[in-house]
Picture 1 (cartoon, rainbow, N blue to C red):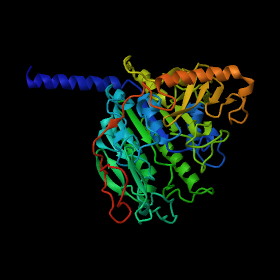
Picture 2: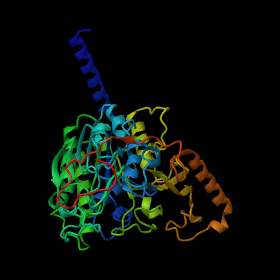
Picture 3: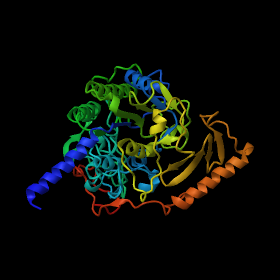
Picture 4: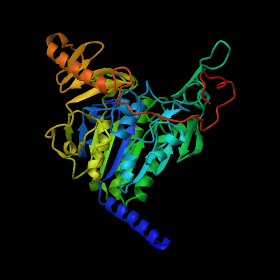
Length: 489
Protein backbone atom coordinates (compact mmCIF):
# COMPACT_ATOMS: atom_id res chain seq x y z
CA UNK A 1 0.00 0.00 0.00
CA UNK A 2 1.42 3.40 -0.92
CA UNK A 3 2.23 5.94 1.77
CA UNK A 4 -0.52 8.37 0.74
CA UNK A 5 -3.19 5.69 1.01
CA UNK A 6 -1.80 4.53 4.38
CA UNK A 7 -1.81 8.11 5.65
CA UNK A 8 -5.42 8.55 4.50
CA UNK A 9 -6.45 5.35 6.27
CA UNK A 10 -4.74 6.44 9.47
CA UNK A 11 -6.45 9.83 9.26
CA UNK A 12 -9.86 8.21 8.75
CA UNK A 13 -9.33 5.92 11.76
CA UNK A 14 -8.39 8.86 13.99
CA UNK A 15 -11.20 11.03 12.59
CA UNK A 16 -13.74 8.24 13.08
CA UNK A 17 -12.55 7.66 16.65
CA UNK A 18 -12.82 11.35 17.53
CA UNK A 19 -16.23 11.65 15.86
CA UNK A 20 -17.61 8.69 17.82
CA UNK A 21 -16.14 10.03 21.05
CA UNK A 22 -17.87 13.36 20.51
CA UNK A 23 -21.19 11.53 21.01
CA UNK A 24 -20.10 10.10 24.36
CA UNK A 25 -20.33 11.92 27.70
CA UNK A 26 -17.41 13.91 29.00
CA UNK A 27 -16.09 12.70 32.35
CA UNK A 28 -14.50 14.96 34.97
CA UNK A 29 -13.13 13.66 38.27
CA UNK A 30 -12.24 16.27 40.91
CA UNK A 31 -10.29 14.55 43.68
CA UNK A 32 -9.44 16.62 46.76
CA UNK A 33 -6.63 15.56 49.11
CA UNK A 34 -7.54 14.83 52.75
CA UNK A 35 -10.92 16.58 52.65
CA UNK A 36 -13.10 15.55 55.58
CA UNK A 37 -16.50 13.90 55.18
CA UNK A 38 -18.23 16.88 56.80
CA UNK A 39 -15.93 19.63 55.49
CA UNK A 40 -18.43 20.82 52.86
CA UNK A 41 -21.98 22.10 53.12
CA UNK A 42 -23.73 19.20 51.36
CA UNK A 43 -22.31 16.82 53.98
CA UNK A 44 -23.06 18.93 57.00
CA UNK A 45 -20.45 21.66 57.37
CA UNK A 46 -21.73 24.86 58.92
CA UNK A 47 -18.24 26.33 59.19
CA UNK A 48 -16.87 26.21 55.66
CA UNK A 49 -18.70 28.21 53.01
CA UNK A 50 -19.11 26.04 49.91
CA UNK A 51 -21.80 27.61 47.70
CA UNK A 52 -20.60 25.95 44.50
CA UNK A 53 -20.62 22.49 46.04
CA UNK A 54 -24.00 23.27 47.60
CA UNK A 55 -25.31 24.02 44.11
CA UNK A 56 -23.60 20.93 42.65
CA UNK A 57 -25.36 18.73 45.22
CA UNK A 58 -28.69 20.51 44.67
CA UNK A 59 -28.36 19.77 40.96
CA UNK A 60 -26.90 16.27 41.41
CA UNK A 61 -26.56 13.31 43.77
CA UNK A 62 -24.72 12.77 47.04
CA UNK A 63 -23.12 9.35 47.44
CA UNK A 64 -23.04 8.90 51.19
CA UNK A 65 -21.37 5.47 51.38
CA UNK A 66 -18.61 6.09 48.86
CA UNK A 67 -15.33 4.48 49.93
CA UNK A 68 -11.74 5.39 49.19
CA UNK A 69 -8.72 4.08 51.14
CA UNK A 70 -7.12 5.33 54.37
CA UNK A 71 -4.29 7.14 52.53
CA UNK A 72 -3.34 8.67 49.19
CA UNK A 73 -1.57 6.25 46.84
CA UNK A 74 -3.85 3.23 47.42
CA UNK A 75 -6.97 5.33 46.90
CA UNK A 76 -5.67 6.69 43.59
CA UNK A 77 -4.68 3.21 42.44
CA UNK A 78 -8.29 2.08 42.96
CA UNK A 79 -9.63 5.06 41.02
CA UNK A 80 -7.27 4.52 38.10
CA UNK A 81 -7.68 0.73 37.75
CA UNK A 82 -11.11 -0.28 39.08
CA UNK A 83 -9.47 -2.62 41.60
CA UNK A 84 -8.94 -2.87 45.32
CA UNK A 85 -5.66 -1.05 45.92
CA UNK A 86 -3.87 -4.13 47.20
CA UNK A 87 -4.54 -5.96 43.94
CA UNK A 88 -2.63 -3.42 41.82
CA UNK A 89 -0.42 -1.48 44.26
CA UNK A 90 0.56 -3.89 47.06
CA UNK A 91 2.63 -1.54 49.25
CA UNK A 92 2.57 -1.01 53.04
CA UNK A 93 1.72 2.70 52.96
CA UNK A 94 2.21 5.33 50.22
CA UNK A 95 4.82 6.18 47.61
CA UNK A 96 7.54 8.77 48.23
CA UNK A 97 9.91 10.75 46.00
CA UNK A 98 12.47 8.74 44.01
CA UNK A 99 10.45 5.53 44.30
CA UNK A 100 11.70 2.44 42.50
CA UNK A 101 8.13 1.11 42.33
CA UNK A 102 4.81 2.41 41.11
CA UNK A 103 1.60 1.43 39.38
CA UNK A 104 2.66 -1.08 36.75
CA UNK A 105 2.59 0.22 33.16
CA UNK A 106 0.79 -3.03 32.26
CA UNK A 107 -2.27 -1.99 34.28
CA UNK A 108 -5.21 -0.65 32.25
CA UNK A 109 -6.13 2.76 33.59
CA UNK A 110 -9.32 4.73 33.10
CA UNK A 111 -7.29 7.22 31.04
CA UNK A 112 -6.05 4.51 28.67
CA UNK A 113 -9.55 3.11 28.34
CA UNK A 114 -11.04 6.50 27.42
CA UNK A 115 -8.10 7.64 25.28
CA UNK A 116 -8.48 4.52 23.17
CA UNK A 117 -12.17 5.33 22.80
CA UNK A 118 -11.24 8.67 21.25
CA UNK A 119 -11.34 10.91 24.31
CA UNK A 120 -8.96 13.79 24.97
CA UNK A 121 -7.32 13.05 28.32
CA UNK A 122 -5.58 15.29 30.85
CA UNK A 123 -4.35 14.93 34.43
CA UNK A 124 -3.87 18.21 36.26
CA UNK A 125 -2.66 17.98 39.86
CA UNK A 126 -1.28 15.44 42.30
CA UNK A 127 -0.54 11.98 40.83
CA UNK A 128 1.08 9.87 43.59
CA UNK A 129 1.28 6.55 41.75
CA UNK A 130 5.00 6.70 41.03
CA UNK A 131 7.30 9.60 40.18
CA UNK A 132 9.61 7.95 37.66
CA UNK A 133 8.91 8.51 33.93
CA UNK A 134 7.60 4.95 33.46
CA UNK A 135 4.90 5.57 36.09
CA UNK A 136 3.78 9.11 35.26
CA UNK A 137 0.32 10.01 33.87
CA UNK A 138 1.75 10.40 30.36
CA UNK A 139 2.75 6.72 30.50
CA UNK A 140 -0.71 5.72 31.77
CA UNK A 141 -3.05 7.10 29.13
CA UNK A 142 -3.03 10.84 29.77
CA UNK A 143 -2.09 12.94 26.76
CA UNK A 144 -1.05 15.82 29.00
CA UNK A 145 0.02 16.18 32.61
CA UNK A 146 0.68 19.17 34.85
CA UNK A 147 1.23 18.82 38.57
CA UNK A 148 3.28 17.64 41.53
CA UNK A 149 3.86 13.88 41.21
CA UNK A 150 3.31 13.19 44.94
CA UNK A 151 2.20 14.99 48.13
CA UNK A 152 3.00 18.65 48.68
CA UNK A 153 4.74 17.88 52.00
CA UNK A 154 7.36 15.62 50.36
CA UNK A 155 10.09 18.20 49.97
CA UNK A 156 12.76 20.09 51.93
CA UNK A 157 11.80 21.94 55.09
CA UNK A 158 13.63 25.01 53.74
CA UNK A 159 11.17 25.13 50.84
CA UNK A 160 8.15 25.31 53.15
CA UNK A 161 7.11 21.71 52.56
CA UNK A 162 6.73 21.00 56.29
CA UNK A 163 5.12 24.25 57.48
CA UNK A 164 1.84 26.05 56.79
CA UNK A 165 1.56 29.44 55.18
CA UNK A 166 3.25 32.02 57.41
CA UNK A 167 4.51 29.46 59.95
CA UNK A 168 8.17 29.24 61.00
CA UNK A 169 10.35 26.77 59.12
CA UNK A 170 10.85 23.78 61.47
CA UNK A 171 14.21 22.26 62.23
CA UNK A 172 14.70 18.85 60.63
CA UNK A 173 15.32 15.82 62.80
CA UNK A 174 19.02 14.95 62.85
CA UNK A 175 21.14 11.95 63.73
CA UNK A 176 23.88 12.12 66.39
CA UNK A 177 26.45 12.75 63.64
CA UNK A 178 24.57 15.84 62.50
CA UNK A 179 23.10 14.44 59.29
CA UNK A 180 19.38 14.75 58.74
CA UNK A 181 17.30 11.66 59.41
CA UNK A 182 16.18 10.04 56.16
CA UNK A 183 15.41 6.57 54.85
CA UNK A 184 15.59 5.30 51.28
CA UNK A 185 13.67 2.14 50.43
CA UNK A 186 11.96 0.82 47.33
CA UNK A 187 8.98 3.13 47.89
CA UNK A 188 11.25 6.18 47.91
CA UNK A 189 12.86 8.65 50.30
CA UNK A 190 11.17 9.22 53.64
CA UNK A 191 12.12 11.81 56.20
CA UNK A 192 14.00 15.05 55.78
CA UNK A 193 16.32 14.13 52.93
CA UNK A 194 13.76 14.48 50.17
CA UNK A 195 14.60 16.42 47.01
CA UNK A 196 12.86 19.69 46.09
CA UNK A 197 9.26 19.51 44.94
CA UNK A 198 8.97 19.56 41.13
CA UNK A 199 6.03 20.96 39.21
CA UNK A 200 5.99 18.74 36.15
CA UNK A 201 4.66 19.54 32.73
CA UNK A 202 4.37 16.22 30.92
CA UNK A 203 7.86 14.75 31.34
CA UNK A 204 9.89 17.82 32.31
CA UNK A 205 10.25 20.10 35.32
CA UNK A 206 8.39 23.37 34.83
CA UNK A 207 9.66 24.90 38.09
CA UNK A 208 10.66 24.19 41.66
CA UNK A 209 7.83 24.47 44.18
CA UNK A 210 8.42 26.72 47.18
CA UNK A 211 5.97 28.57 49.45
CA UNK A 212 4.82 30.99 46.75
CA UNK A 213 4.18 28.18 44.30
CA UNK A 214 2.38 26.12 46.96
CA UNK A 215 0.01 29.03 47.42
CA UNK A 216 -0.68 29.16 43.69
CA UNK A 217 -1.52 25.48 43.14
CA UNK A 218 -5.33 25.61 43.29
CA UNK A 219 -5.58 28.60 40.96
CA UNK A 220 -2.91 27.21 38.63
CA UNK A 221 -4.55 23.81 38.37
CA UNK A 222 -7.96 25.41 37.87
CA UNK A 223 -6.76 27.66 35.04
CA UNK A 224 -5.30 24.64 33.25
CA UNK A 225 -8.51 22.67 33.76
CA UNK A 226 -10.68 25.44 32.33
CA UNK A 227 -8.34 25.83 29.36
CA UNK A 228 -8.54 22.08 28.69
CA UNK A 229 -12.35 22.17 28.72
CA UNK A 230 -12.41 25.12 26.31
CA UNK A 231 -9.90 23.48 23.98
CA UNK A 232 -11.88 20.22 23.75
CA UNK A 233 -15.46 21.41 23.41
CA UNK A 234 -15.87 19.64 20.08
CA UNK A 235 -14.80 16.18 21.27
CA UNK A 236 -15.38 14.09 24.36
CA UNK A 237 -12.83 14.53 27.10
CA UNK A 238 -11.68 12.99 30.35
CA UNK A 239 -10.32 15.48 32.88
CA UNK A 240 -8.77 14.22 36.10
CA UNK A 241 -8.25 17.12 38.52
CA UNK A 242 -6.60 15.85 41.74
CA UNK A 243 -5.89 18.87 43.92
CA UNK A 244 -2.93 19.11 46.30
CA UNK A 245 -5.32 20.95 48.62
CA UNK A 246 -6.23 20.43 51.43
CA UNK A 247 -3.23 18.27 52.35
CA UNK A 248 -0.66 19.57 54.84
CA UNK A 249 1.09 22.02 54.49
CA UNK A 250 -1.86 24.38 54.22
CA UNK A 251 -1.37 27.08 51.57
CA UNK A 252 -4.58 28.88 50.59
CA UNK A 253 -4.21 31.26 47.67
CA UNK A 254 -3.57 34.94 48.22
CA UNK A 255 -7.19 35.84 47.42
CA UNK A 256 -8.45 33.37 50.07
CA UNK A 257 -5.85 33.44 52.87
CA UNK A 258 -7.46 35.02 55.91
CA UNK A 259 -10.89 35.33 54.33
CA UNK A 260 -12.55 32.68 56.48
CA UNK A 261 -12.97 33.38 60.23
CA UNK A 262 -11.89 29.78 60.90
CA UNK A 263 -8.28 29.78 59.76
CA UNK A 264 -6.20 28.74 56.80
CA UNK A 265 -7.65 25.23 56.52
CA UNK A 266 -11.14 26.63 56.01
CA UNK A 267 -9.70 29.17 53.58
CA UNK A 268 -8.32 26.33 51.49
CA UNK A 269 -11.57 24.36 51.56
CA UNK A 270 -13.34 27.48 50.34
CA UNK A 271 -10.77 27.97 47.58
CA UNK A 272 -11.40 24.39 46.43
CA UNK A 273 -15.11 25.25 46.31
CA UNK A 274 -14.27 28.27 44.16
CA UNK A 275 -12.29 25.99 41.84
CA UNK A 276 -15.24 23.62 41.48
CA UNK A 277 -17.42 26.59 40.59
CA UNK A 278 -15.04 27.68 37.84
CA UNK A 279 -14.90 24.18 36.35
CA UNK A 280 -18.68 23.78 36.37
CA UNK A 281 -19.13 27.27 34.94
CA UNK A 282 -16.72 26.43 32.11
CA UNK A 283 -18.79 23.34 31.34
CA UNK A 284 -22.04 25.31 31.43
CA UNK A 285 -20.65 28.14 29.30
CA UNK A 286 -19.50 25.66 26.67
CA UNK A 287 -23.00 24.20 26.54
CA UNK A 288 -21.74 20.82 27.74
CA UNK A 289 -23.60 20.40 31.03
CA UNK A 290 -26.07 17.80 29.75
CA UNK A 291 -23.34 15.59 28.35
CA UNK A 292 -20.78 15.86 31.14
CA UNK A 293 -20.53 13.72 34.27
CA UNK A 294 -18.61 15.42 37.05
CA UNK A 295 -17.64 13.50 40.19
CA UNK A 296 -16.32 15.39 43.20
CA UNK A 297 -14.67 13.32 45.93
CA UNK A 298 -11.77 13.04 48.40
CA UNK A 299 -8.96 10.49 48.38
CA UNK A 300 -9.59 9.51 52.02
CA UNK A 301 -11.20 10.78 55.17
CA UNK A 302 -10.11 14.06 56.70
CA UNK A 303 -7.34 14.69 59.19
CA UNK A 304 -7.92 16.18 62.63
CA UNK A 305 -7.80 19.63 61.04
CA UNK A 306 -11.11 18.89 59.36
CA UNK A 307 -14.38 17.23 60.29
CA UNK A 308 -15.66 13.71 59.62
CA UNK A 309 -18.79 14.06 61.77
CA UNK A 310 -20.77 11.86 62.39
CA UNK A 311 -18.14 9.29 61.46
CA UNK A 312 -15.53 7.91 63.84
CA UNK A 313 -11.82 8.23 63.11
CA UNK A 314 -9.61 10.12 60.68
CA UNK A 315 -7.28 9.62 57.73
CA UNK A 316 -5.02 6.60 58.13
CA UNK A 317 -7.63 4.46 59.88
CA UNK A 318 -10.25 1.98 58.70
CA UNK A 319 -12.93 3.54 60.86
CA UNK A 320 -15.57 5.09 58.62
CA UNK A 321 -14.01 8.52 59.15
CA UNK A 322 -10.80 7.31 57.55
CA UNK A 323 -12.24 5.90 54.35
CA UNK A 324 -15.67 7.39 53.56
CA UNK A 325 -15.44 10.31 51.15
CA UNK A 326 -17.85 13.19 50.66
CA UNK A 327 -18.82 12.47 47.06
CA UNK A 328 -21.15 14.27 44.67
CA UNK A 329 -22.08 13.22 41.13
CA UNK A 330 -23.41 15.90 38.75
CA UNK A 331 -24.87 15.40 35.27
CA UNK A 332 -27.89 17.62 34.56
CA UNK A 333 -30.62 15.76 32.70
CA UNK A 334 -29.21 12.35 33.59
CA UNK A 335 -28.71 12.44 37.37
CA UNK A 336 -31.80 13.48 39.37
CA UNK A 337 -31.40 16.82 41.09
CA UNK A 338 -31.10 17.00 44.88
CA UNK A 339 -30.89 13.23 45.24
CA UNK A 340 -28.81 10.87 47.36
CA UNK A 341 -27.83 7.23 47.55
CA UNK A 342 -26.34 5.25 50.42
CA UNK A 343 -25.43 2.13 48.40
CA UNK A 344 -21.94 0.70 48.98
CA UNK A 345 -19.67 2.06 46.26
CA UNK A 346 -16.23 3.59 45.90
CA UNK A 347 -13.18 4.61 43.93
CA UNK A 348 -12.93 1.19 42.28
CA UNK A 349 -16.33 1.74 40.63
CA UNK A 350 -15.28 4.81 38.64
CA UNK A 351 -13.46 2.92 35.86
CA UNK A 352 -16.26 0.42 35.09
CA UNK A 353 -18.79 3.25 35.22
CA UNK A 354 -16.75 5.25 32.72
CA UNK A 355 -16.48 2.18 30.51
CA UNK A 356 -20.24 1.67 30.51
CA UNK A 357 -20.98 5.32 29.76
CA UNK A 358 -18.43 5.48 26.94
CA UNK A 359 -19.54 2.22 25.38
CA UNK A 360 -16.27 0.41 26.03
CA UNK A 361 -16.43 -3.31 26.71
CA UNK A 362 -14.01 -4.37 29.42
CA UNK A 363 -11.85 -7.42 28.82
CA UNK A 364 -13.10 -10.52 30.61
CA UNK A 365 -9.50 -11.60 31.02
CA UNK A 366 -8.57 -8.72 33.35
CA UNK A 367 -10.07 -8.99 36.81
CA UNK A 368 -11.41 -5.81 38.37
CA UNK A 369 -13.29 -5.39 41.63
CA UNK A 370 -15.41 -2.37 40.73
CA UNK A 371 -18.84 -2.34 39.11
CA UNK A 372 -20.85 0.00 36.90
CA UNK A 373 -22.68 2.69 38.92
CA UNK A 374 -24.49 4.34 36.03
CA UNK A 375 -27.93 3.03 37.02
CA UNK A 376 -27.39 4.09 40.63
CA UNK A 377 -26.43 7.57 39.45
CA UNK A 378 -29.44 7.94 37.16
CA UNK A 379 -32.06 6.53 39.55
CA UNK A 380 -34.13 8.54 42.06
CA UNK A 381 -33.18 8.41 45.74
CA UNK A 382 -32.09 4.90 46.75
CA UNK A 383 -34.36 3.33 44.13
CA UNK A 384 -31.54 1.38 42.45
CA UNK A 385 -29.78 -1.49 44.16
CA UNK A 386 -26.07 -1.08 44.60
CA UNK A 387 -23.59 -3.30 42.77
CA UNK A 388 -21.86 -4.45 45.97
CA UNK A 389 -23.08 -6.33 49.02
CA UNK A 390 -19.64 -6.10 50.65
CA UNK A 391 -16.63 -3.86 51.06
CA UNK A 392 -13.17 -4.78 52.33
CA UNK A 393 -11.17 -2.27 54.35
CA UNK A 394 -7.45 -2.56 53.69
CA UNK A 395 -4.84 -0.44 55.40
CA UNK A 396 -1.75 -1.05 53.31
CA UNK A 397 -1.33 -4.81 53.05
CA UNK A 398 -3.59 -5.56 56.04
CA UNK A 399 -7.27 -6.37 55.83
CA UNK A 400 -8.62 -4.70 58.96
CA UNK A 401 -12.40 -4.72 58.52
CA UNK A 402 -15.22 -6.19 56.44
CA UNK A 403 -18.64 -4.76 55.66
CA UNK A 404 -21.65 -6.64 54.34
CA UNK A 405 -24.84 -4.66 54.01
CA UNK A 406 -25.42 -2.79 57.27
CA UNK A 407 -22.88 -4.82 59.26
CA UNK A 408 -19.19 -4.01 59.73
CA UNK A 409 -16.70 -6.20 61.57
CA UNK A 410 -13.30 -4.94 62.73
CA UNK A 411 -11.26 -8.12 62.52
CA UNK A 412 -8.51 -7.55 65.09
CA UNK A 413 -10.74 -5.86 67.65
CA UNK A 414 -13.53 -8.41 67.01
CA UNK A 415 -16.08 -5.59 67.20
CA UNK A 416 -19.30 -5.52 65.19
CA UNK A 417 -21.29 -2.41 64.28
CA UNK A 418 -24.65 -1.83 62.65
CA UNK A 419 -23.86 1.07 60.32
CA UNK A 420 -27.54 1.62 59.51
CA UNK A 421 -28.23 2.53 63.14
CA UNK A 422 -24.75 3.41 64.37
CA UNK A 423 -22.78 5.15 61.65
CA UNK A 424 -20.39 6.46 64.30
CA UNK A 425 -19.33 2.92 65.29
CA UNK A 426 -19.96 3.37 69.00
CA UNK A 427 -21.97 0.29 70.04
CA UNK A 428 -20.27 -3.10 69.74
CA UNK A 429 -22.89 -5.76 68.93
CA UNK A 430 -20.58 -8.75 68.44
CA UNK A 431 -21.84 -10.69 71.44
CA UNK A 432 -25.46 -10.22 70.33
CA UNK A 433 -24.93 -11.41 66.76
CA UNK A 434 -22.39 -14.25 66.71
CA UNK A 435 -23.86 -15.56 63.44
CA UNK A 436 -23.09 -12.22 61.70
CA UNK A 437 -19.55 -12.26 63.11
CA UNK A 438 -19.06 -15.77 61.74
CA UNK A 439 -20.43 -14.76 58.34
CA UNK A 440 -18.12 -11.74 58.07
CA UNK A 441 -15.13 -13.76 59.21
CA UNK A 442 -15.85 -16.15 56.36
CA UNK A 443 -15.78 -13.24 53.93
CA UNK A 444 -12.39 -12.26 55.33
CA UNK A 445 -11.18 -15.83 54.81
CA UNK A 446 -12.32 -15.68 51.19
CA UNK A 447 -10.33 -12.47 50.70
CA UNK A 448 -7.33 -14.08 52.39
CA UNK A 449 -7.32 -16.73 49.67
CA UNK A 450 -7.28 -14.02 47.00
CA UNK A 451 -5.45 -10.87 48.11
CA UNK A 452 -4.11 -12.09 51.45
CA UNK A 453 -5.17 -11.01 54.93
CA UNK A 454 -1.75 -9.60 55.86
CA UNK A 455 0.66 -10.91 53.22
CA UNK A 456 0.62 -10.49 49.45
CA UNK A 457 -1.88 -13.01 48.11
CA UNK A 458 -2.06 -14.78 44.74
CA UNK A 459 -4.52 -12.22 43.39
CA UNK A 460 -2.10 -9.31 43.83
CA UNK A 461 -0.48 -8.18 40.60
CA UNK A 462 3.19 -7.11 40.28
CA UNK A 463 4.31 -3.57 40.95
CA UNK A 464 6.01 -1.61 38.23
CA UNK A 465 9.76 -1.31 38.89
CA UNK A 466 12.74 0.69 37.65
CA UNK A 467 16.36 -0.17 38.38
CA UNK A 468 17.80 3.22 39.33
CA UNK A 469 15.19 5.82 40.29
CA UNK A 470 16.33 9.44 40.15
CA UNK A 471 14.96 12.70 41.58
CA UNK A 472 13.50 15.23 39.19
CA UNK A 473 15.48 17.98 40.91
CA UNK A 474 18.86 16.82 42.26
CA UNK A 475 19.21 16.21 45.97
CA UNK A 476 20.50 19.23 47.81
CA UNK A 477 24.02 19.10 49.23
CA UNK A 478 23.55 21.71 51.91
CA UNK A 479 23.60 19.36 54.87
CA UNK A 480 19.94 18.46 54.54
CA UNK A 481 20.37 15.51 52.20
CA UNK A 482 23.88 14.25 52.74
CA UNK A 483 23.02 10.71 53.78
CA UNK A 484 20.21 8.24 53.29
CA UNK A 485 20.03 4.61 54.30
CA UNK A 486 19.51 1.91 51.69
CA UNK A 487 21.06 1.42 48.30
CA UNK A 488 18.93 3.48 45.92
CA UNK A 489 20.69 5.99 43.72
